[in-house]
Length: 102
Image 1 (cartoon, helix red, strand yellow):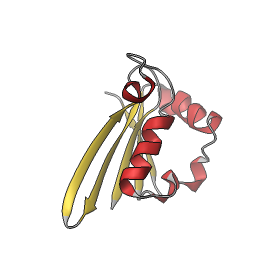
Image 2 (cartoon, helix red, strand yellow):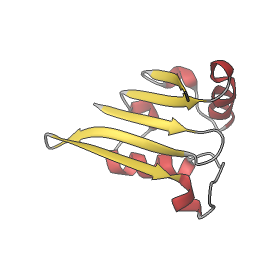
Image 3 (cartoon, helix red, strand yellow):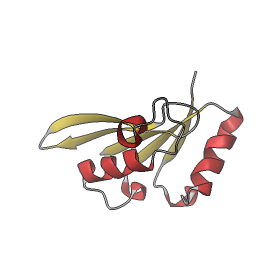
């Protein structure tokens, strides 16, 4: 199983992944600021997503078993709009869950 967590809004955007490889659970976390070199970046985490896909050997984020998106807005409106604006089709995810920041 491959699980991907996304933080796409506000500061410190990034990606976390949990997956199994050779009967071992692997956990990685990618902060977008480590790739774009902008402290406390609010940039959409494209570079972090690409690194997560390389590590997990997925062709697309849509291939993950579950994608969890942290939300800070009412009902995830901002996060859903951001994902859509950056070319992601919410209907293509196998399982997408929006979790409140608090």
